[in-house]
Image 1: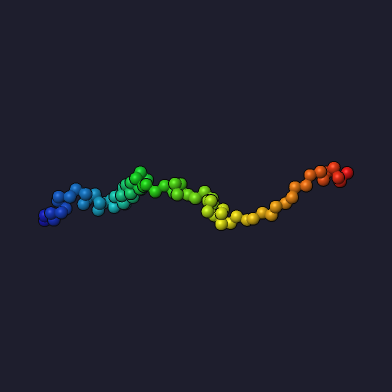
Image 2 (image 1 turned 90 degrees about the horizontal axis):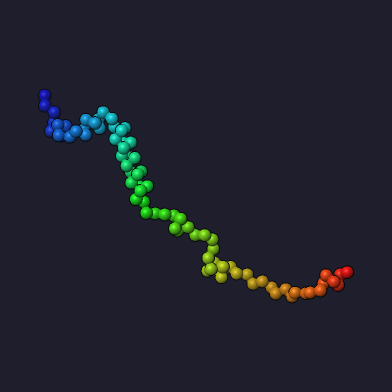
Length: 77
């Protein structure tokens, strides 16, 4: 009995049937390497490092002016 044409021409058909986990592992490894080598997203470039000038202007509190009194240390003695 002759095998179908697709089994005679493809050398990978027999390999995939005997060891399906190997091909899954190789595909997973390839995807992982491709993602790690060619991923252009770098979160450290987009990280906000604290409030900026606009936030400070919005939340700025008015501090009361406290008069500076000199000579109190001498007066207490």
